[in-house]
Length: 370
Image (cartoon, rainbow, N blue to C red; front, side):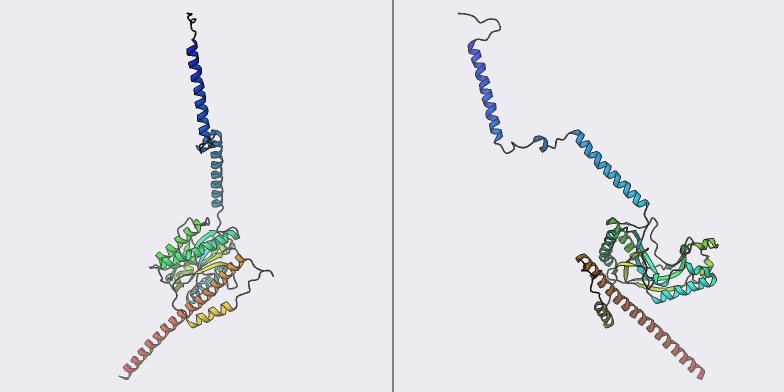
Protein backbone atom coordinates (compact mmCIF):
# COMPACT_ATOMS: atom_id res chain seq x y z
CA UNK A 1 0.00 0.00 0.00
CA UNK A 2 1.48 3.32 -1.03
CA UNK A 3 1.57 6.27 1.33
CA UNK A 4 0.84 9.71 -0.04
CA UNK A 5 3.73 12.10 -0.36
CA UNK A 6 4.42 14.88 2.16
CA UNK A 7 1.84 17.60 2.03
CA UNK A 8 -0.29 15.61 -0.46
CA UNK A 9 -4.08 14.99 -0.38
CA UNK A 10 -5.53 11.51 -0.94
CA UNK A 11 -8.26 10.91 -3.54
CA UNK A 12 -11.05 10.68 -0.94
CA UNK A 13 -10.26 14.08 0.52
CA UNK A 14 -9.95 15.59 -2.96
CA UNK A 15 -13.39 14.32 -3.89
CA UNK A 16 -14.86 15.81 -0.69
CA UNK A 17 -13.34 19.24 -1.40
CA UNK A 18 -14.63 19.21 -4.97
CA UNK A 19 -18.07 18.16 -3.83
CA UNK A 20 -18.23 20.96 -1.21
CA UNK A 21 -17.13 23.53 -3.80
CA UNK A 22 -19.85 22.38 -6.22
CA UNK A 23 -22.52 22.55 -3.49
CA UNK A 24 -21.41 26.06 -2.50
CA UNK A 25 -21.62 27.28 -6.09
CA UNK A 26 -25.05 25.68 -6.55
CA UNK A 27 -26.33 27.32 -3.34
CA UNK A 28 -24.99 30.75 -4.34
CA UNK A 29 -26.57 30.50 -7.78
CA UNK A 30 -29.86 29.38 -6.27
CA UNK A 31 -29.79 32.27 -3.80
CA UNK A 32 -29.12 34.85 -6.54
CA UNK A 33 -31.99 33.46 -8.62
CA UNK A 34 -34.30 33.77 -5.63
CA UNK A 35 -33.24 37.34 -4.93
CA UNK A 36 -33.83 38.36 -8.55
CA UNK A 37 -37.48 37.44 -8.18
CA UNK A 38 -37.87 39.51 -4.99
CA UNK A 39 -39.73 42.93 -5.28
CA UNK A 40 -36.69 44.96 -4.18
CA UNK A 41 -34.35 43.40 -6.71
CA UNK A 42 -34.32 46.49 -8.96
CA UNK A 43 -33.86 49.03 -6.17
CA UNK A 44 -30.64 51.01 -6.24
CA UNK A 45 -29.43 50.83 -2.66
CA UNK A 46 -27.34 53.95 -3.23
CA UNK A 47 -30.38 55.93 -4.28
CA UNK A 48 -32.68 54.34 -1.72
CA UNK A 49 -30.47 55.40 1.16
CA UNK A 50 -29.64 58.78 -0.39
CA UNK A 51 -25.97 58.01 -0.58
CA UNK A 52 -24.54 60.93 -2.58
CA UNK A 53 -21.06 61.95 -3.42
CA UNK A 54 -19.67 64.41 -0.86
CA UNK A 55 -18.57 66.96 -3.53
CA UNK A 56 -22.15 67.13 -4.88
CA UNK A 57 -23.54 67.79 -1.38
CA UNK A 58 -21.05 70.60 -0.82
CA UNK A 59 -21.81 72.10 -4.24
CA UNK A 60 -25.56 72.10 -3.56
CA UNK A 61 -25.06 73.70 -0.14
CA UNK A 62 -22.79 76.36 -1.60
CA UNK A 63 -25.41 77.25 -4.24
CA UNK A 64 -28.15 77.49 -1.59
CA UNK A 65 -25.97 79.63 0.69
CA UNK A 66 -25.07 81.91 -2.20
CA UNK A 67 -28.77 82.35 -3.06
CA UNK A 68 -29.63 83.21 0.55
CA UNK A 69 -26.73 85.67 0.65
CA UNK A 70 -27.88 87.36 -2.58
CA UNK A 71 -31.47 87.61 -1.30
CA UNK A 72 -30.24 89.24 1.91
CA UNK A 73 -28.14 91.73 -0.05
CA UNK A 74 -31.12 92.63 -2.28
CA UNK A 75 -33.36 93.05 0.78
CA UNK A 76 -30.83 95.29 2.54
CA UNK A 77 -30.35 97.35 -0.62
CA UNK A 78 -34.10 97.77 -1.04
CA UNK A 79 -34.43 98.80 2.61
CA UNK A 80 -31.57 101.26 2.14
CA UNK A 81 -33.30 102.72 -0.94
CA UNK A 82 -36.66 102.76 0.83
CA UNK A 83 -38.56 105.85 -0.29
CA UNK A 84 -42.29 105.75 0.56
CA UNK A 85 -44.50 106.79 -2.35
CA UNK A 86 -47.90 105.53 -1.14
CA UNK A 87 -49.76 105.88 2.13
CA UNK A 88 -52.97 104.93 3.94
CA UNK A 89 -55.05 108.04 4.54
CA UNK A 90 -57.96 108.88 6.82
CA UNK A 91 -59.45 111.90 4.99
CA UNK A 92 -60.72 114.88 6.98
CA UNK A 93 -64.18 115.84 5.73
CA UNK A 94 -65.79 117.66 8.65
CA UNK A 95 -66.41 121.23 7.44
CA UNK A 96 -66.01 122.59 10.96
CA UNK A 97 -62.46 121.21 11.19
CA UNK A 98 -61.57 122.35 7.66
CA UNK A 99 -62.96 125.83 8.31
CA UNK A 100 -61.05 126.15 11.58
CA UNK A 101 -57.77 125.18 9.93
CA UNK A 102 -58.32 127.69 7.12
CA UNK A 103 -58.83 130.43 9.73
CA UNK A 104 -55.57 129.30 11.38
CA UNK A 105 -53.70 129.35 8.06
CA UNK A 106 -55.00 132.81 7.18
CA UNK A 107 -53.98 134.13 10.60
CA UNK A 108 -50.43 132.89 10.02
CA UNK A 109 -50.28 134.26 6.47
CA UNK A 110 -51.38 137.69 7.70
CA UNK A 111 -48.30 137.72 9.92
CA UNK A 112 -45.95 136.45 7.18
CA UNK A 113 -47.33 136.40 3.63
CA UNK A 114 -44.50 134.30 2.19
CA UNK A 115 -45.67 131.37 4.31
CA UNK A 116 -48.73 131.02 2.05
CA UNK A 117 -46.70 128.64 -0.14
CA UNK A 118 -46.04 126.38 2.86
CA UNK A 119 -49.73 125.76 3.56
CA UNK A 120 -51.48 122.46 2.83
CA UNK A 121 -54.58 122.86 0.65
CA UNK A 122 -57.89 122.18 2.39
CA UNK A 123 -58.74 119.30 0.01
CA UNK A 124 -55.64 117.42 1.19
CA UNK A 125 -56.30 117.36 4.93
CA UNK A 126 -55.85 113.83 6.27
CA UNK A 127 -54.27 111.61 8.89
CA UNK A 128 -51.51 109.34 7.63
CA UNK A 129 -52.05 105.85 9.00
CA UNK A 130 -49.13 104.11 7.24
CA UNK A 131 -46.53 104.89 4.57
CA UNK A 132 -45.15 102.33 2.11
CA UNK A 133 -43.24 101.78 -1.11
CA UNK A 134 -45.04 100.35 -4.15
CA UNK A 135 -42.75 100.28 -7.19
CA UNK A 136 -45.03 99.01 -9.95
CA UNK A 137 -48.61 98.10 -10.87
CA UNK A 138 -48.26 94.57 -9.48
CA UNK A 139 -47.21 95.91 -6.09
CA UNK A 140 -50.07 98.43 -6.18
CA UNK A 141 -52.49 95.53 -6.70
CA UNK A 142 -50.90 93.70 -3.78
CA UNK A 143 -51.41 96.85 -1.72
CA UNK A 144 -55.08 97.02 -2.75
CA UNK A 145 -55.58 93.40 -1.68
CA UNK A 146 -53.86 94.11 1.63
CA UNK A 147 -56.22 97.05 2.22
CA UNK A 148 -59.25 94.86 1.53
CA UNK A 149 -57.93 92.22 3.94
CA UNK A 150 -57.49 94.95 6.55
CA UNK A 151 -61.22 95.77 6.65
CA UNK A 152 -62.42 92.76 8.74
CA UNK A 153 -59.49 93.29 11.11
CA UNK A 154 -60.58 96.90 11.70
CA UNK A 155 -64.18 95.80 12.21
CA UNK A 156 -62.99 93.36 14.87
CA UNK A 157 -61.03 96.13 16.60
CA UNK A 158 -63.95 98.58 16.58
CA UNK A 159 -66.52 95.95 17.64
CA UNK A 160 -69.33 97.75 15.83
CA UNK A 161 -68.52 101.17 17.32
CA UNK A 162 -67.76 104.44 15.55
CA UNK A 163 -64.23 105.84 15.59
CA UNK A 164 -64.50 109.56 16.38
CA UNK A 165 -61.33 111.66 16.28
CA UNK A 166 -61.37 115.00 18.18
CA UNK A 167 -58.76 117.64 17.27
CA UNK A 168 -57.47 120.26 19.66
CA UNK A 169 -54.34 122.42 19.82
CA UNK A 170 -51.26 122.98 17.64
CA UNK A 171 -47.77 121.44 17.63
CA UNK A 172 -44.82 121.01 15.26
CA UNK A 173 -42.24 118.43 14.23
CA UNK A 174 -38.93 120.17 14.78
CA UNK A 175 -40.51 123.53 13.95
CA UNK A 176 -40.62 122.37 10.31
CA UNK A 177 -44.08 120.79 10.08
CA UNK A 178 -47.11 122.36 11.69
CA UNK A 179 -50.05 120.14 12.64
CA UNK A 180 -53.31 120.08 14.56
CA UNK A 181 -53.06 117.65 17.46
CA UNK A 182 -55.34 114.72 18.09
CA UNK A 183 -56.86 115.19 21.53
CA UNK A 184 -56.34 112.55 24.19
CA UNK A 185 -59.12 110.04 24.87
CA UNK A 186 -60.44 106.51 24.44
CA UNK A 187 -60.12 106.78 20.65
CA UNK A 188 -56.31 106.64 20.82
CA UNK A 189 -56.05 102.93 21.65
CA UNK A 190 -58.17 101.59 18.74
CA UNK A 191 -56.50 104.03 16.32
CA UNK A 192 -53.02 102.84 17.34
CA UNK A 193 -54.18 99.25 17.10
CA UNK A 194 -55.53 99.85 13.58
CA UNK A 195 -52.22 101.45 12.55
CA UNK A 196 -50.21 98.51 13.91
CA UNK A 197 -52.51 95.95 12.28
CA UNK A 198 -52.23 97.79 8.95
CA UNK A 199 -48.43 97.75 9.16
CA UNK A 200 -48.39 94.02 9.91
CA UNK A 201 -50.90 93.22 7.14
CA UNK A 202 -48.92 95.05 4.46
CA UNK A 203 -45.53 93.74 5.60
CA UNK A 204 -46.81 90.16 5.53
CA UNK A 205 -47.57 90.76 1.84
CA UNK A 206 -43.89 91.55 1.26
CA UNK A 207 -44.45 95.31 1.07
CA UNK A 208 -41.92 97.68 2.61
CA UNK A 209 -44.08 99.71 4.97
CA UNK A 210 -43.79 101.81 8.09
CA UNK A 211 -41.27 104.23 9.56
CA UNK A 212 -38.48 103.98 12.09
CA UNK A 213 -40.25 106.44 14.39
CA UNK A 214 -43.34 105.46 16.30
CA UNK A 215 -46.78 106.30 14.91
CA UNK A 216 -48.04 109.71 16.03
CA UNK A 217 -51.41 110.62 14.51
CA UNK A 218 -51.56 114.27 13.41
CA UNK A 219 -53.30 116.59 10.94
CA UNK A 220 -50.70 118.57 8.97
CA UNK A 221 -51.65 122.11 7.91
CA UNK A 222 -48.25 123.49 6.83
CA UNK A 223 -44.76 122.28 5.85
CA UNK A 224 -41.73 124.47 5.19
CA UNK A 225 -40.45 121.81 2.77
CA UNK A 226 -43.27 122.77 0.37
CA UNK A 227 -41.36 126.01 -0.30
CA UNK A 228 -37.58 125.31 -0.08
CA UNK A 229 -36.77 128.91 -1.06
CA UNK A 230 -38.11 130.08 2.30
CA UNK A 231 -34.83 129.07 3.92
CA UNK A 232 -32.94 131.40 1.58
CA UNK A 233 -35.31 134.16 2.69
CA UNK A 234 -34.41 133.54 6.31
CA UNK A 235 -37.40 131.39 7.27
CA UNK A 236 -35.75 128.35 8.86
CA UNK A 237 -38.45 127.38 11.33
CA UNK A 238 -42.10 127.89 12.22
CA UNK A 239 -42.27 130.56 14.91
CA UNK A 240 -44.59 129.45 17.77
CA UNK A 241 -45.85 133.03 18.05
CA UNK A 242 -47.54 132.58 14.66
CA UNK A 243 -50.08 130.13 16.10
CA UNK A 244 -50.10 130.99 19.82
CA UNK A 245 -53.78 132.05 19.72
CA UNK A 246 -54.72 128.53 18.55
CA UNK A 247 -52.51 126.63 20.98
CA UNK A 248 -55.53 125.08 22.75
CA UNK A 249 -58.23 125.71 20.16
CA UNK A 250 -60.85 122.97 19.62
CA UNK A 251 -61.19 122.34 15.90
CA UNK A 252 -63.93 119.71 16.02
CA UNK A 253 -64.43 115.96 15.64
CA UNK A 254 -64.00 113.73 12.59
CA UNK A 255 -66.20 110.65 12.36
CA UNK A 256 -63.84 108.23 10.65
CA UNK A 257 -65.73 106.60 7.78
CA UNK A 258 -63.10 105.34 5.37
CA UNK A 259 -59.43 104.57 4.73
CA UNK A 260 -57.83 105.27 1.34
CA UNK A 261 -54.73 103.89 -0.38
CA UNK A 262 -53.24 107.05 -1.91
CA UNK A 263 -50.27 107.98 -4.08
CA UNK A 264 -47.88 110.71 -2.98
CA UNK A 265 -46.63 111.33 -6.53
CA UNK A 266 -49.54 110.89 -8.93
CA UNK A 267 -51.63 113.89 -9.96
CA UNK A 268 -54.15 114.95 -7.31
CA UNK A 269 -57.88 114.91 -7.88
CA UNK A 270 -59.82 118.02 -8.91
CA UNK A 271 -60.86 118.67 -5.28
CA UNK A 272 -57.23 118.72 -4.14
CA UNK A 273 -57.27 115.25 -2.56
CA UNK A 274 -54.64 112.68 -3.41
CA UNK A 275 -54.92 110.11 -6.21
CA UNK A 276 -56.76 107.20 -4.62
CA UNK A 277 -56.15 103.60 -5.73
CA UNK A 278 -58.74 101.99 -3.47
CA UNK A 279 -60.78 102.58 -0.31
CA UNK A 280 -62.57 100.71 2.45
CA UNK A 281 -65.54 101.90 4.49
CA UNK A 282 -65.12 101.49 8.24
CA UNK A 283 -67.37 101.96 11.25
CA UNK A 284 -70.97 100.90 11.74
CA UNK A 285 -73.72 102.74 9.83
CA UNK A 286 -77.27 103.07 11.07
CA UNK A 287 -80.17 102.24 8.73
CA UNK A 288 -79.67 104.14 5.50
CA UNK A 289 -81.95 107.13 5.02
CA UNK A 290 -84.00 107.51 1.80
CA UNK A 291 -81.63 110.28 0.71
CA UNK A 292 -78.67 107.92 1.01
CA UNK A 293 -80.41 105.19 -0.98
CA UNK A 294 -81.40 107.73 -3.64
CA UNK A 295 -77.80 108.93 -3.91
CA UNK A 296 -76.58 105.34 -4.14
CA UNK A 297 -79.04 104.63 -6.99
CA UNK A 298 -77.91 107.75 -8.86
CA UNK A 299 -74.28 106.69 -8.58
CA UNK A 300 -75.05 103.22 -9.93
CA UNK A 301 -77.02 104.64 -12.87
CA UNK A 302 -74.02 106.72 -13.94
CA UNK A 303 -71.51 103.85 -14.01
CA UNK A 304 -69.48 103.69 -17.24
CA UNK A 305 -69.77 100.74 -19.63
CA UNK A 306 -66.24 99.56 -18.79
CA UNK A 307 -64.77 99.84 -22.26
CA UNK A 308 -61.12 100.72 -22.38
CA UNK A 309 -59.36 102.33 -25.36
CA UNK A 310 -62.20 101.25 -27.63
CA UNK A 311 -61.68 97.53 -26.91
CA UNK A 312 -63.28 94.96 -24.68
CA UNK A 313 -61.80 94.85 -21.15
CA UNK A 314 -60.46 91.59 -19.76
CA UNK A 315 -62.03 89.83 -16.76
CA UNK A 316 -59.47 91.16 -14.27
CA UNK A 317 -60.07 94.73 -15.43
CA UNK A 318 -63.84 94.27 -15.16
CA UNK A 319 -63.58 92.91 -11.63
CA UNK A 320 -61.30 95.71 -10.55
CA UNK A 321 -63.47 98.37 -12.18
CA UNK A 322 -66.62 96.94 -10.60
CA UNK A 323 -65.03 96.93 -7.14
CA UNK A 324 -63.97 100.55 -7.49
CA UNK A 325 -67.37 101.67 -8.73
CA UNK A 326 -69.16 99.96 -5.85
CA UNK A 327 -66.67 101.32 -3.31
CA UNK A 328 -66.94 104.87 -4.68
CA UNK A 329 -70.74 104.74 -4.70
CA UNK A 330 -70.87 103.48 -1.13
CA UNK A 331 -68.29 106.02 0.04
CA UNK A 332 -70.25 108.90 -1.49
CA UNK A 333 -73.44 107.66 0.13
CA UNK A 334 -71.72 107.26 3.50
CA UNK A 335 -70.20 110.72 3.29
CA UNK A 336 -73.54 112.31 2.47
CA UNK A 337 -75.15 110.48 5.38
CA UNK A 338 -72.45 111.65 7.78
CA UNK A 339 -72.75 115.24 6.58
CA UNK A 340 -76.54 115.13 7.02
CA UNK A 341 -76.11 113.73 10.53
CA UNK A 342 -73.55 116.38 11.48
CA UNK A 343 -75.72 119.19 10.06
CA UNK A 344 -78.76 117.96 11.99
CA UNK A 345 -76.67 117.81 15.14
CA UNK A 346 -75.44 121.37 14.64
CA UNK A 347 -78.97 122.60 13.92
CA UNK A 348 -80.22 120.90 17.08
CA UNK A 349 -77.51 122.53 19.15
CA UNK A 350 -78.33 125.91 17.58
CA UNK A 351 -82.03 125.50 18.40
CA UNK A 352 -81.23 124.69 22.01
CA UNK A 353 -79.09 127.82 22.29
CA UNK A 354 -81.89 129.96 20.82
CA UNK A 355 -84.44 128.49 23.23
CA UNK A 356 -82.16 129.17 26.18
CA UNK A 357 -81.59 132.73 24.99
CA UNK A 358 -85.34 133.24 24.56
CA UNK A 359 -85.98 131.94 28.07
CA UNK A 360 -83.30 134.23 29.49
CA UNK A 361 -84.73 137.21 27.62
CA UNK A 362 -88.21 136.34 28.90
CA UNK A 363 -86.96 136.11 32.46
CA UNK A 364 -85.15 139.41 32.11
CA UNK A 365 -88.35 141.04 30.82
CA UNK A 366 -90.33 139.67 33.74
CA UNK A 367 -87.73 140.95 36.18
CA UNK A 368 -87.80 144.36 34.56
CA UNK A 369 -91.60 144.47 34.87
CA UNK A 370 -91.30 143.60 38.53
